[in-house]
Length: 453
Image (cartoon, rainbow, N blue to C red; front, side, top):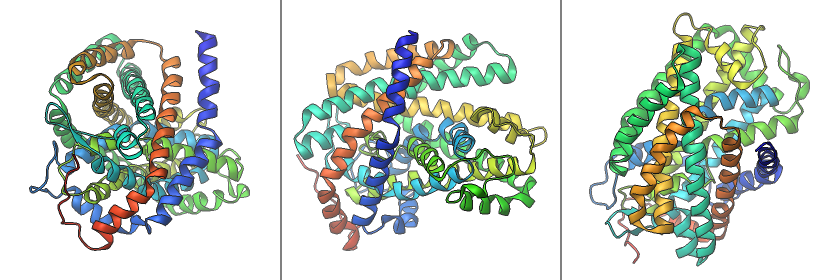
């Protein structure tokens, strides 16, 4: 097992190294330029995300589709992961992470557009879509679509399930000395109540949970920034200057080269918002929307909230806390985050604990849908109930098991998901531009598309 773990660690390190960083960031920049900076339409996207579209077809509303996608992306990667990036790459990593989210809006827009463009109606009447359908129907590469579905199904049990359940169990044990077996049993029961109800129940729960938990977490961060008020502006200046000048790093931060800051900031941004990974288009395909561009805009707002807002404010909290309290340790991302939040009198630690627990629980729900659709693509609708039972059982296993190997395997699967998805985005970029011209650039956002057979 140690040998296998070491092998997976090496593979994961290579997959998420500079080649992947360059490929993902390059795709972000390429699509941004080719689509004439769709970031300009972010406020239109936010408006559409909370607007009902009664004249369209789909399984869930655009808001619930977005909430489910955010449930799967906003999690420990935004909180602990941001601190890890700062610990390894210095405060400049925050700016690189933010820029990744800013340009990643274009990629998430493109994913959402293809999800609607190539979605189909399944045998049970539900909408099905995602990179596997774009690869098969758009490019005719079913073999690559099958690989993507396999990687997605495996990843759902790893990063989407067991590692999240383990995080909940670890948090409750460290904070309240509750046995992982008890936490695992409760989490398993709650997850089963939701996912056995199907996508509409998952979407409704995420629609209730995500806005509440995000607002609760942001209020906590703002409270820390108020406490650290004298250090907020110096933190912003330090983040900006150290992203391009290693000599600017100070105040107890570890020294880091520009390349190191860029690598950890970009990779953390890519990992946290999943732009380019191909997961969120799966739920985007189920949205009630009248044309591909409307959902593309709604999907793009997810990256805005996830990275441009949540990751950025988390990074500012960490950096300002380090400047304000030089005794904060750089041992690891988790320690750095805990010490920063502990500076809020009385409620800091419970706030972080509750935030992480709610984020990780919602991630389990969101990824259950991704894995379910991948399995359905591979094996058909009759396998869904089997998948759900196995997924629920995996929650308990993840709560009580040592998951080092699962973490590394999940990292590998996430990278392997991204590769075929990025191929589809680049190869189908002409279609993306064509649809954008048809509905957005011509001012026809209200036009109803004709569903393809």
